[in-house]
Image 1: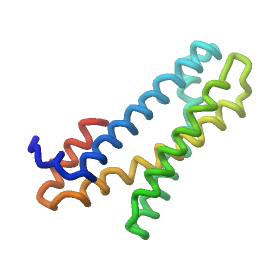
Image 2: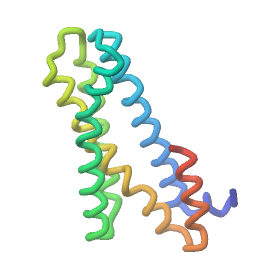
Image 3: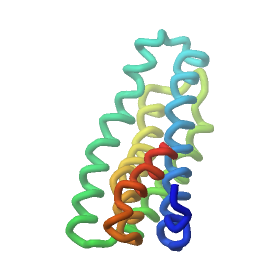
Image 4: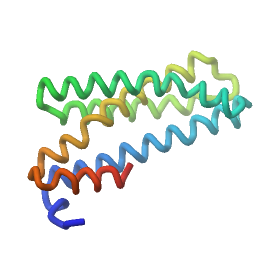
Length: 147
């Protein structure tokens, strides 16, 4: 891994953002099934079905964010929206308990999916924009390493 990939401020920040985004996504996708199985006493299959709102909203939000970035050429507002949505989303997770309604645990997943979706498609182009085209493969490898 060439050290010059980490000398550009935007690329270094992009790598850190990708690490943070991956960490937050793993956190949510790890603890939501534990909540569904351990607290709500759901089966593993039902727990997976209960994660469908997260997946169903993440993909469209990722497509919209990628389209916005393609049209505007700007990625920083999308990163701010993504991490802001994650900050807002993870707060209400403390409301989840054994008596939480279906609506509650579905609604707390949607802002998390919005945040993850907007970050999933916008961090790698931001990293690659800061580097030369010859570093595309290497920067993609470093980006994927953190995922």
